[in-house]
Length: 132
Image (cartoon, rainbow, N blue to C red; front, side, top):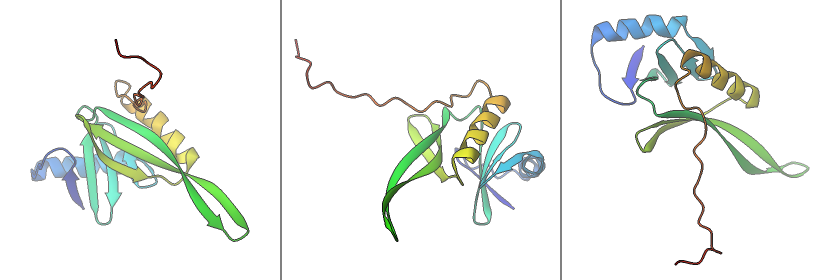
C-alpha cells in the first residue's frame, strides 16, 4: 500500500507501518476509512490520509444533478465528503449514498468530537441593503 498525505509529504517508513495497522483497525464506508487518529481515502492503489487534528472541517455536501432517464427527467442527489484545511478544500469524495454519508459523519463525530462537521454557511449579499 502506498500512503500519501493530504497536507505534507511524510515519507517515514515507521510512520507508514503505523498507518497500515491503523487502516486495518478502522471502519470502512465506501472509499473512506475512519480510524482512531486519521481519515483514509482510497483512490486507485493509493491511500490518502489526513490526521483529524490537521483538518479544519470535514463535512457532507449534497448536490442535485439533473438526469435524463429513459421515461422522463429527474434529479439525482449525489453525496460527497469534503475535507478542508486552512481556507481551502483539499478533497471531495463521492460517497455511495445518503445512508453511508450519515453513518460516516456519525462515525467521525464519535472518533473526533472536536472536529467541525458542519457545512460552511455561504455569505449572501443582500441587494436590498442601502450602503450608508
